[in-house]
Image 1 (cartoon, rainbow, N blue to C red):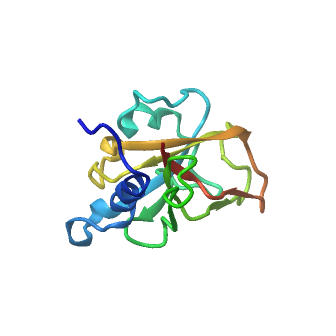
Image 2: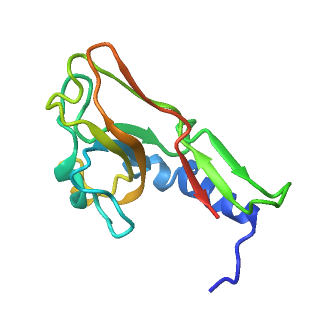
Image 3: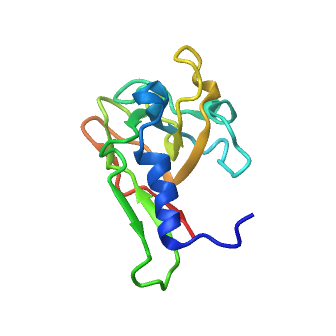
Length: 162
């Protein structure tokens, strides 16, 4: 086991995980950001989409079941930073591009608002995404509902290794 990871090492791990295409650009390079209600609070023990998909917000009115796709190796993961220059905070992080949904009616269609965004890979088959691995979750700071024309924007979602 390593005794420590340098700040540059942390940034490299994140860059490799999220910005390098694997498998010659296969579908495993796709990740998803999905929205769930507060019925099942995500935690470190959740491993696959099957653990949380029962609380995904209702599809329709601007939301597609399974969420928005992101592609590894593109600008979908647009910032990689390490604290190697200042060496004061000892971290490396990566940010996702800004994610946005626009309501085309009551959003979500069931009126049960979104409380968390879930980042997952594409390990499941196209017919069964329940095997997708959960990588991270983001607390939206409360229940989010929209009316037609409003936008839910998630800006600078960050995964940080400290």
